[in-house]
Length: 465
Image 1 (cartoon, rainbow, N blue to C red):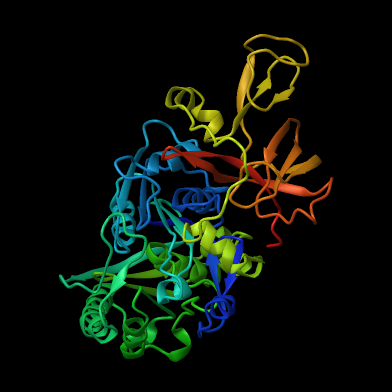
Image 2 (tube, rainbow, N blue to C red):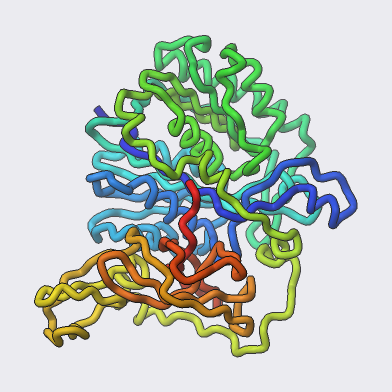
């Protein structure tokens, strides 16, 4: 049986309180918080984190990766290849982008579900807007990933339907920092009939009725349309899923996937879950969970990640988004990474692969040809360390280093099983860090220079999940 084998989600640590927006601009901004990608995160790095969560402990290697986002880190270059490299997938595994719109996520999910072998759909988005606008206030940043294949699935697809129409409701031309929207009543007029028709057709294909739906997910950038479609679906009121607007915000291309991940985190066997995505049309998939769903649930649930967070000031948020230009430290600008060197060290730079000496068992980070302990030459076995926890041996707080979020915390960490490495820390309070703290690795963007993103790994405190 082909279906969903595993899932994972990533919600950034930082949260922006909407009241801080209102206080800064002197206008009402509502309550709750929105998730904020840190200065060193983008859709690619968040996609890696969600994919790592989905693949952790799963003895299946994807043969294809489909990456969807409305905010790609690169154009004219495939972003999915960085995700492919960070996951240490074989060269035979394909990697494709589906970019530019929220609806691209539905395409990535469908492509992965319909693929022949195991396939991974990765959905990520960074949502922003002009200061004081609805997109800034109601948006959010997150990622989700879903592994499809044959075998003991956690959920099977019962039915699928789509409705497509050409209408101008939301748009952004290349180079513009924020989207524009038509008047809200027009969006409601366009979306509601499409959503209702797609849901009716998907339920017909699945052979289920609306009252038998245990969880109804309706996601899309147009909040009024979402509520209208959910209200008219004919499901029990308690079956309508929380849209996460108060705690995370709407996460664009990632949102339907994020809500599905949250539903699967709490799902019981034999539950029917209907996912309605409203974006430039409507896409609906009806799922039924199996007895395997509880066994695949990880500690890093969406709810746990929402609860584990830290505040970010509004001024810092504007700086990270590029709307507030602040003077950087008076140090030389960072040098862009060189393409040949990056290609030669792909397994280290992206997959964080060290080496272990076959002669004496010493682990080396980064990988070496000559063992520092027994001096054996070319007797190394590659060993990936991205999922190995570590402990801070010592650290320093650098207030002069170039950073979008000074000061920089640099730590020397000792990995379980051997190996010591010096790296930056992220999602950390410089006043709270101490020797002996437990940390884990996370894939981040160190900096961008000359339009080149320098991706590598940082350490972060183990989140209380």
